[in-house]
Image (cartoon, rainbow, N blue to C red; front, side, top):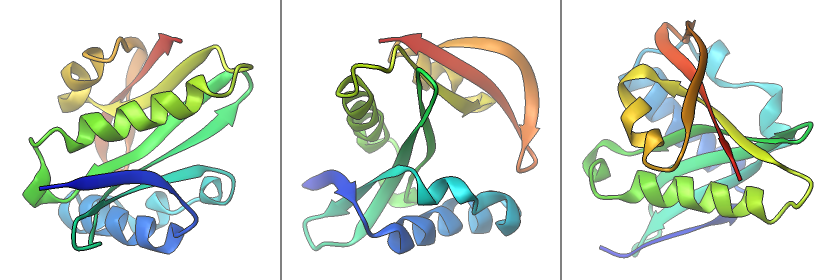
Length: 141
């Protein structure tokens, strides 16, 4: 299956994917999933060869840090490498902003090993986000 990943202005479709994955599957409260950061973030959308949206992620700046968030892939494509491709697209975006020195994300604890493959390291304590244990992770660019 061929999947393309590109920056998008179609935030509505990105949010619909996040609702499917985070709200419906993982039971994150809707009011915690949607926030004002969607207005300032660069959104990435993955589409299959039929044009169907199958994954999304977003990047926004916080000082000298590029923050990656809301990374999700539809259930049928998990384990195919699509999540890794989304992270790579986000990291490429952050690297293209020379004033940014680090990348940061809040990882669901079960996904820490996945993010470590990209050079992220845990920092701080475990915290709850949307009812799910998370740990912040950073990597120097």
